[in-house]
Image (cartoon, rainbow, N blue to C red; front, side, top):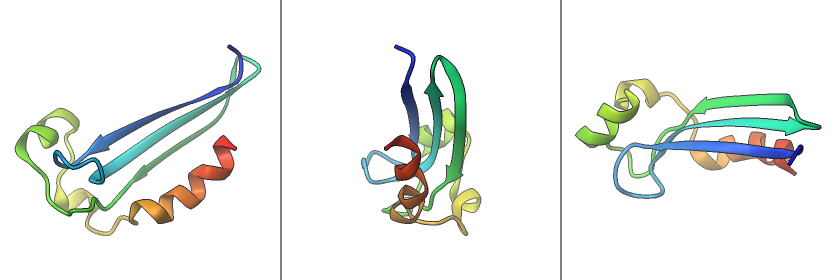
Length: 80
């Protein structure tokens, strides 16, 4: 496989919609062609202890971050 996108999400709590960061690597022809990372304001907007322990993010980190639909507008063209 020489062309693919790898995507990793972190969540703020146990809700799937609580994405608080996303990282993407685009590989074309076996070489890294693009990278993307963004903090995201989670929905619902609260962090549980265990999620913060795993990825080290808290509410202060994402206070001014965009919500996921805004970030997705930047991601979608990269993986299409």
